[in-house]
Image (cartoon, rainbow, N blue to C red; front, side, top):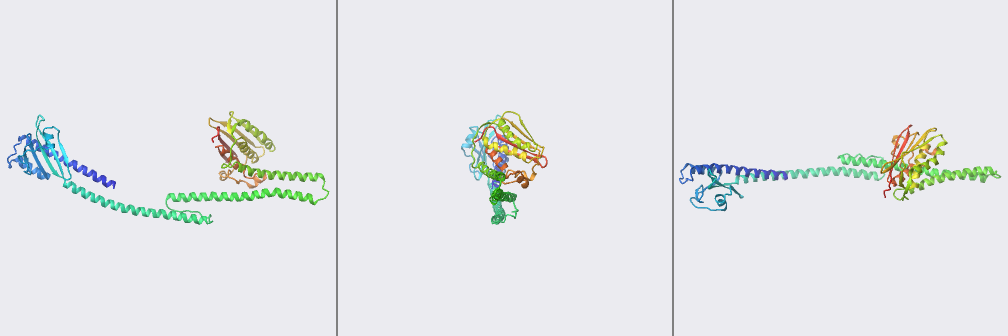
Length: 445
């Protein structure tokens, strides 16, 4: 519709401009001839009079030649012949020196042009009126064709829109049916809905989400099973030890002491598992609160390393600490101590005998950075995105040997996220692991 209006408007404008230019050209030619003949057009058989009549016929209009006294010396319609005419346009052209005048009505174009002598003095005027019927007929035809095209394009647009909507809704209906089918418990079948790119992307995103949910659910079920086993094992051991003492008579005090030491160790093991579970709940980002204060990070890390060096010394693992500058940050000391302690302890536990652990501290104007590197077994690439998830353990057998519950890194990440920080891992199997932590120096509430 806009295009048809543009075509119609520009054609009408161009047609009128061409007609005006043509009329002005003819009037100028006629003015020169009238001036040469000194307005002597009285004889109807005069060549100039005939030429004026022919020009009026060719232009399909009317020509008036008016002298300086406002007398009509020539009227091709002979209606105003030899009469006097004073109209605003004629008066403005002859006496006012206003130059050429143009008036356009619905049916006609009127041009009033002054007749000037060699000294540019107005000696009279020529009024030429031509019909605009041809332009109007052409405009009507173009308008009719434009309306027809508009109607055709409208119908095509409606049909295309209908077909597209049907196609899109068909894809969305298929997607909805498959989602409903999956909601009923059939999660093993992928969506794989074909259609528009956006629908396919949505289908792929939902598949990835369901895969992650299944992995999380499997990890949760496995964790529940493992924790149930871990919680039950110490209790079973304690019950066996206690029953053994009760079934025996006259047991020496040394045996009682040995059994009680074993019972205490099982109680400590049970307590460690429970504490990890409680710590994970306490560091949950949705519910945890922080006790923020300014803490010297150099002193904090040195204290943590002092506590953990005896554990490393048992396997002859060298622990190195490097601090580029003194760093003071606004943190919750208890929660971040637990996070960094988990990272360093893991670097020791999952290391090789005679290996090394390097801890470094650095800072800029906005953040401080803690890096924990080890020469341990490394983490497979396909596991690196999941090690921070709750309940996830890379090597279940090795984790049981080292006494882990699979919650340490989840606790560490929660504590770091509470401080609006970030943690990243870089690892190659067999070449060790590097954890990098970035935390703002000033706590952001």
